[in-house]
Image (cartoon, rainbow over all chains, first blue to last red; front, side):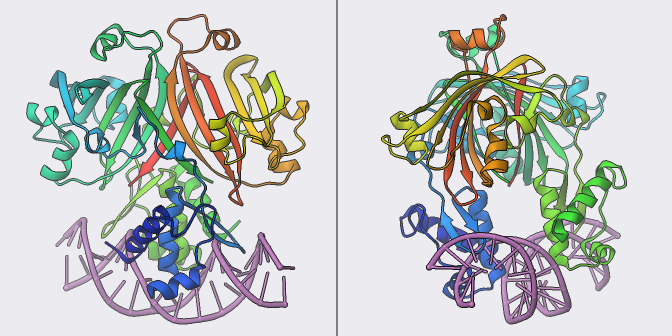
Length: 239
Length: 239
DNA sequence: CAGTGGTCTAGACCACTTC
DNA sequence: AAGTGGTCTAGACCACTGA
């Protein structure tokens, strides 16, 4: 835990607790330097984190302010959210996540997927197709490819539980970034069945993802087909 | 144009031109300091920009490298992309964008929308419902609310062309950030007609957006319903 | 014009990778 | 052990806001 992270956490807590209220000015940077007994750079790094999280905004010549966010945006009932990519299991927090494995194999990846994974079609990759359930209800079908040269030791048990936990806790690899593309589409016949879709108003929010490790290696190409009535993707963009 | 922006542009160009190739090491930070005759902080700010754009990654103790991206991800045919939020017109670049106005009025916003805009239900907002066409083909239906106390002087002509151009060039306001939520859904009957959907495999990628100005004021709440076969949303996340 | 955040400098020391 | 990026300091000057 670095100093700037500590400060960011502390400020975030104060915003959440209403010490600094919506649209209200935060102390100026030099004041925070005094408060936390640190340099301006460190304060600015902390503030940068908060700005990226969409909690504050800054105005040159004026000050830093708490961003006004509607409560509606904060908590949206009935939807699972993904603003990070920590893996589905982690995203879900307290709710119970289980998996139903449709297929688990080692294969030569199709050409396009091999290209996305920057691997040869002659090398092998794990292929996992599984349904993820939260509190027993199906939410998403995931189709995942992982090069065995990068990710090893995946068992049926791993796939049943959490692949991300295996990568981080067993293999001790560090997940760094991911590139995602969100699309809408209709479910296939199989998906309609797997996701228990019995309502014509439900379709699919598809997220195609390429994920990278700490050392730049691509470890995963996946496509997740979510029930449109139970999942949404949240993003914050700052120019 | 600041020094660190110049350097970022230059490095980006060199990556694009293949001076630094995929998975290849970039010069070390101190070398770049010499090359550009600047301090390490400035170099690091430039690199930060490139990392956020998903072009490079860095490893403590090792070096900085060009991220390997599949060409597939770079250019995706047939899809319009939105990785920024510069407004639809700007996003589309060279292609011809036109609008068909369905409704243009000044209204008291519904309760939820007033809450999202942080305004009173008794104050007024522009309401615009329009179809956006690229090269004559409908892509998206936009439903937009803008408080008249923030955005003024919007005419039918503005709505016909580009609201964002009006905000930036006429009102001289600066757009700073936006919070988005992507969902999938089925088109309404009207939308099916407006978007000329004659194919049961097409549905809607909906993007709900709250957009902020430079000074923290919320200037827009909008929902965009895109044809699922012509639009996708791209995001890059770094932990 | 005073006050604020934005850019930039020139350094120090640390954590991690690589050999 | 040497080399790299990550954190942090103490300061300077600039661009912009707001009274």
